[in-house]
Picture 1 (cartoon, rainbow, N blue to C red):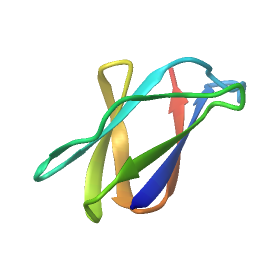
Picture 2 (cartoon, rainbow, N blue to C red; picture 1 turned 30 degrees about the vertical axis):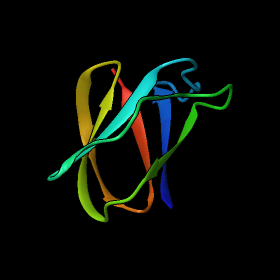
Picture 3 (cartoon, rainbow, N blue to C red; picture 1 turned 90 degrees about the vertical axis):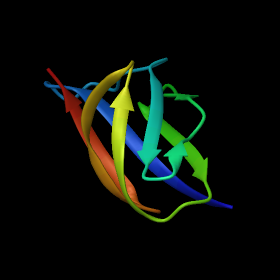
Length: 74
């Protein structure tokens, strides 16, 4: 199984912990994975290609999966 990493930080660069992260592909969505103490969520998935990233239910960006993306929350 493939996986992608979403790194979530505050606008001043501090890691955001315990936020649910989901990837949405054309064929469906992944299960939610909570960010860890470093603000990272490793999300397993079957699909490849462009996916929309959601953090705590809010659309925050996209990722070319499998891959790594850094998100800064406002």
